Image 1: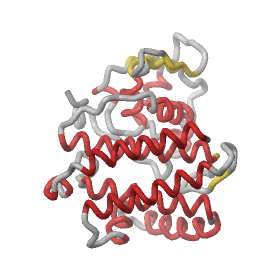
Image 2 (image 1 turned 120 degrees about the horizontal axis):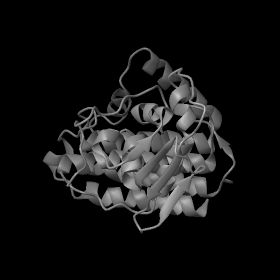
Image 3 (image 1 turned 135 degrees about the vertical axis):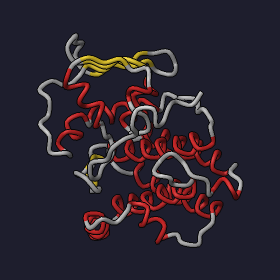
Length: 266
């Protein structure tokens, strides 16, 4: 767990540096993610790092808390309602400080678990390794919203490998979560890493495949870009269907941006 915990903490600290530079007005500006503000993005991360810590330290308490959240979501409550209610009246710098504290506590708790230990979450239970990876993924994705709102380009790092792996391994989940038949063949995925290396998953195939930049793939599976607005190349009907619905995060089916809605920052 040492590697993923180190990368999770590094990812969070990198976003904290950006969030710490926000002016009072920027905390309230709209991002491309459902018009959430940077305050919403950080408050959301804070809340679910809090419930993540509960999942690690007190799984039964987490299950009770999660049941209430899932019930309210099934009744039509917006996801943003939960962090807005919990942190009403808390300003940007304070919510940032709370999030950093909660995140450090969560990382410390995860570091004490074995990578295969099972932890509950809002979808299927996950291994501690996958759980930490999911927290890194969500931090990176919500950070992307803030970068996009500010019109800034974030330099990609090799921490993207964790997100790319999660994206690949949730191929079946993306279909099952929508009640759709899973294509019979998973695609071969070949991605160019930020450091010039090449990351590969699956067996080489001329039928079902994806190739391109790791960052672009991560933007698609976290639903921050439409595949048409990236440099990804792909082949095969199953792969094309997946790229339209790819979802590497837990929860009900969600739809990513339409073509042209969120283009890569210059």
